[in-house]
Image 1 (cartoon, rainbow, N blue to C red):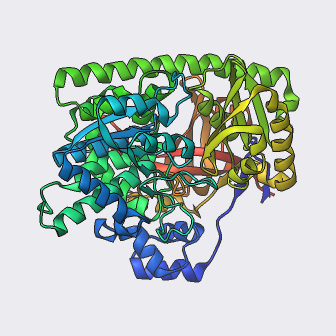
Image 2 (image 1 turned 180 degrees about the vertical axis):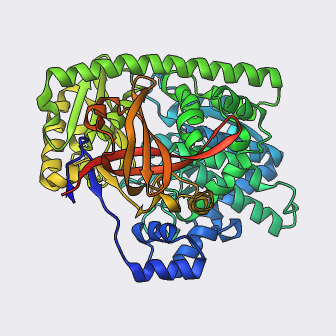
Length: 581
């Protein structure tokens, strides 16, 4: 059999084969061989690791006391509660920050605390720093400030709070710089020397750990019944923030999100319920994909182009009418964000089409005076995914550039930024998603250095878009029972993507174009017939005009329900036309 090249530019990465290990997982866990092969493909080698991955429950969460300085933080918060001090929660303006802020406000109010919250808008005159909350904290006579999803790089700003007699507890998950802020306590699993094994906690995850540790302390002192505040009711917020912030859905995060999705399906937060409904999602069947693609973008639109305080209000609201109004407002704001995004995307596409040399290097650096600062992260993500290259997108206003970086697994960027900090006013985030500010005159130098670093580090294969395959399968094995067994691998998300299988099949007849851009496949393997949908593949129909073509298809199987009838449908990721020798 001779294999032709796929018309897509995807490099197929075939699964690692280890029949002995696969068969061991089959016998130990009584799972389908293809499901076992998925585990082998995803680098599982030990029975204990597979068991943890498949069956870990809430009691298996890491004790919050493992976080460095957690005892100092809980003691200071306990002192504030006892003295009746006003507390200010200061959160970042993305979904991770909004959900983490909501969690701590809701939790502390349940304990009877006098608590306020503050989230900075992108339109802040001070450039979205913690100092924006200083005046508000003083007006409310707050003696304690707790950050959420931010603060680890704000050493200078936090010094100003100390001068005003305001103690600060940082809860964050971003990479620390060389200078750790001088404050009461810093809760961050990425602190140097930290023994907390889950370095992938998100901002809302750290906030949840703080609440958990506080409950443990109060229960130990006999001041609060352990079941008075059920911490599980905060897991809907943890799931929402973790998924939105692209937290790795492995280890502890996987447990938090698995139970968080269950909590989302029965959430009592009326504002969140209204938001789920306007997102056209059935709350009882919500998935991580629904959260990432429908719910989170609506909440995120506030931090990008409006007032993110509305997000916290929505998640805290107890009035039905206000909940409906806020949810509609978020939906409208998301539509506005989409319009801005379309306009800026069209402009960016024109820049690239007029200057094709921009994308020939192993990294892409783009800047403009017109792109909306709240959209550049979306633009960076799109370009990075489209070309599979590290991408920097910068928008300039009044001589200052605000930039967003998205990259590929082969090129973590924080070290690169640290090596070029002489050019930057500020930077922070993760190795694969971060932001920066820079003087306009330094942008050309940053572009040259960034592209040079990528060219030195990356090989040609690294920047080829890849399709990772988990297991080969025959149509006869694609049963409802098999698809049910795959649910063991949920929740899907970062570092635990939906399963991609591959199989050989014949076309019963050439595919049909549906919805202008998509292809509907009719496929046969042996005596089993299945239909597939190839999204945005209409332009590839000319290669499929022959009847009985033999194809190698890569796909994710789904259960499709139409008119109350269930069928198995394949979401086609790519295909290669095969010819018999």
